[in-house]
Image (cartoon, rainbow, N blue to C red; front, side, top):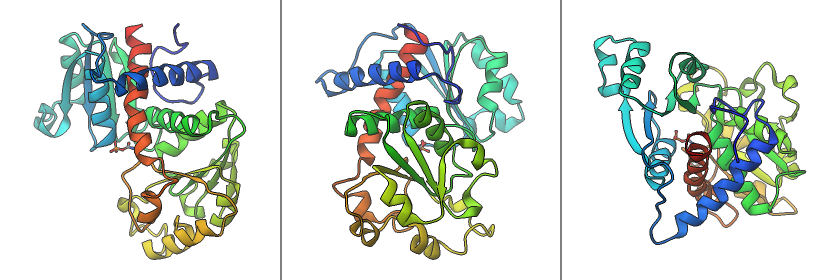
Length: 305
Ligand code: CP
């Protein structure tokens, strides 16, 4: 039982057999998470360093918990309280950390491609926890696990992704992963929130939110990034909500219920209404729980197996 990949930089090019194996392993770790004692000795003796150069609530804590559940030794690095503040280069910082004999690195960084670059100069298993606007593979894996948990499959399902696709690492990893698993993907966003290369992604695109929701078995709603405001990409948050928001009125007009997902953090009453995010068709907190199981599976399969 092993993956064809040695590191998890992204889901682009990762074969279906690997994704199936990660999902199957994560479902068995979900059972561990339901036990009174939620811990297994699988990664005893393995040292994992968590390098977070950007804020995170879900991913950082989820990796930390997954490592504890697997009995790994962990080191948590925060850029804000490190010698980077004294002018030390990123390369020197990482080489010094690895001189202390780390086995696995989990890294989030604002620069696309930075996690892959790290793999060129350290001898360790590397896991991408989000690199800028590029990829966030463990988020897409937990999204796929949550969809599979709900529907029993991924193949032939219709999945809509709504929001700021252009600046979203979650969207890109979801597109790669879902297409590999045989799902049909539709993107819905204003033209300014679509990447220039959208035609090469092999997905359907619409600017009409009602068409996107009619298509969907599940809709993954992306955060409207406040840092993009004032850059002329959308006229206002109010207008975005009116045109693309996941609201009760919109969902009530559909002939079927659809499953509601969000990677977080959410802007309630902007991209999604509170009553929808907290409603019976939302699986947003299941996604968070599945995130721990997925990260246990990835850590186990890449390093402990
Ligand atoms: N979904 C996600 O990546 O959330 P965080 O930024 O809180 O980790």
